[in-house]
Length: 105
Image (cartoon, rainbow, N blue to C red; front, side, top):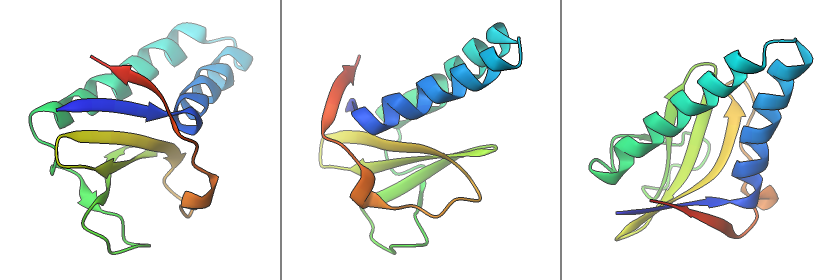
């Protein structure tokens, strides 16, 4: 299964790293983002492991919970597109998602 990332998802990940950099803990941010990528990698073999996003109730809009973040992805037939990596308490707005920017292999 191919895994792609929208520009907004990549920006979310960069913002997480920037947050930890502002706290003078860049290594923590790097390790945390690496752990998010490792979690996303599980989609390659188990694309339905994430739950359906409650705000939408659509089978193809799913999320992995990586506390305190939600990794939201669109489940395709042979692909998963990560569209947002948001704090769990935020409600999802898919109108703020950009087109895929990168493929993760």
